[in-house]
Length: 301
Image 1: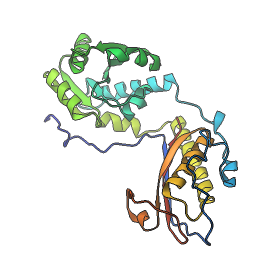
Image 2: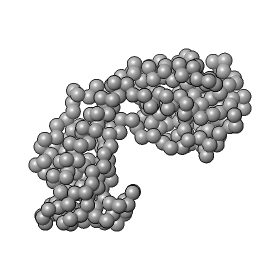
Image 3: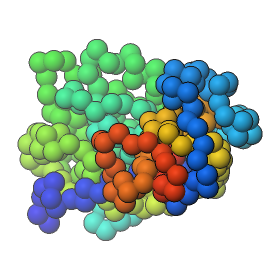
Image 4: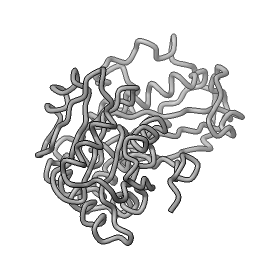
């Protein structure tokens, strides 16, 4: 099999599976109503608990209904990936991840993408390997919830060479390494150059089999995210007033999720702009008869 390039690997990023999203449209204001004085800027406190329209009083924190993903569930995902690596034909000898939703899915570690690589390297057997910048080691160890080998790299070292060396220390010097689809090309390219004995291929067969199959717990979290999203959107639509801007409405959405103890938001489009898939930067004010489109959601994990 030819070694993949960014064009030959699937680059269609899948959203975080905990993202509850919905699109609500085609609301016509039945009669003119006055805008909120001065808009909503500065009117909504950080906790979203007051200065909100009456419809928001029904929104309550999900609280004990949320059972967060625990360490054993994250580790179970890693074990399922390793099982698939052994069962698929041809087999995978290791997987390579850069920061992103898949890194979080398997480890519970949220990590921003930067020029300094934090990598997850998962051999077909044994504990996962994490390669981290030296000055970030402490922060990573605080986030880790299960046994893992941590390899540190300094500013004068190559993180991909250290990742390859970690595999070699496990006796893995040749074979197929699956590269997760969202890994930046520069990391993929450097890893491939550091590991001429490996065949770098797409990790999609493993990733799709893992992430496309939801557990009962995952499905329940998704249901809660969708429930919260519809409740917030319902409160927002009941609170619309002529003269509101898309920013005003967006702040209402954020405040609604905050009142439920969640992080969320939305893209808001008004009138003719609702026909534009990704909106417009032009200021908009709500007027009678406008279509209102709200596209957003929240994270429950």
